[in-house]
Image (tube, rainbow, N blue to C red; front, side):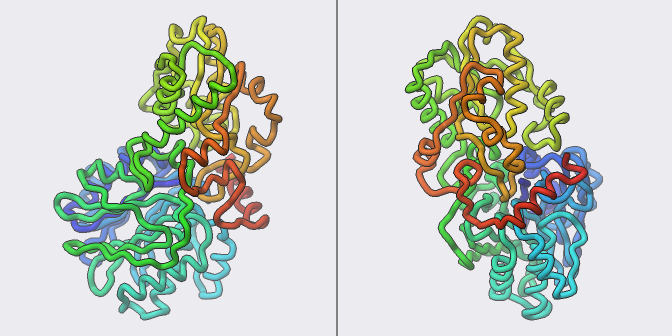
Length: 475
């Protein structure tokens, strides 16, 4: 899972890109990069670290131009090396590209490239997408191409590259600097576009990147669609290979910021409705409680909604260190444990002697919730009930969320009756699959919950993905 932003038609684009990337920092904390196009010349800077540390004023000054692409990375394919940071650049025909997502058939794509004497140099899966796209352009018409050639190149990508991805590319089309964006045919990973008050066009993984720059969101990239943006011109939107959308439900549950807007509305509102449904389902269990407390920060809207539904007080029981990262996307269990201790501090008065409902967004490995319950038990609550506004995660994600192999998922390792003891709580309530589907209100990708993958992944592809996640730098 990563985050990107592209821009065209704004002076000193690099500074604006760095601001937008800071708004997307929750999508990736490992590495970041910006590439700009300035009168035909590409300027590129990328490094390990977060946006504020990598993009100093001195660095941004060197990235001249009125168009560019920025990226924040959280690796689910490949390692965490500097060479894997995005964006990537190919000199022939001259394309800069970044993406958000995951390629599931890397070995097939690399074989396709080898037949054309092209070699992938990194472990980042945007590079093969870029090479397929660029090779199609060069093969079709050398360096003289227009909208039809771009469309055909995207169609070639869709034919060769499987998985879930939204891409932004910067190149010259018909002699004009052009920002190109396209989204996989199922629209699994998010992507939106908008316009600034100065007329600049932007594309991004989430609308909060547009908000940070005072831009107005125009819409979402359609599944299987291609968008071409140029300074001073209206957008060109082309259908390439549209299929019924299967947007990722886990974006709505956890990954996206609550103030982002997606196809069905504000993420905050979606989480609120999930909390209402969870409250109704919890009520039927016959359990009683005194207070509802969220696990910060993702769970706050759902916990408030659950409290209102149950007629219980909502209280903040944890203080979060604003300078700690997201524990879910940290690379190993030891780092996640240390980060949790730094991240959350308990307010004892909110727990002592009370029957508490802890509301969380999801349970994947089960280790974080166990450590959280241990923290809470130290302040002597009467009871601790865990309520989760998503179903149990029973299947790995192959589309860009770092959910591990099946035997690492707690919902598959332990029988349901053992979950409460394993988590150190008195009871566990997950939102039902039916509740999730009804709340979503339309077909989505919820393969991590129901095992229905909108883009098929073979056993061989799954084995390669799992092996990559177990690499030496992703223990």
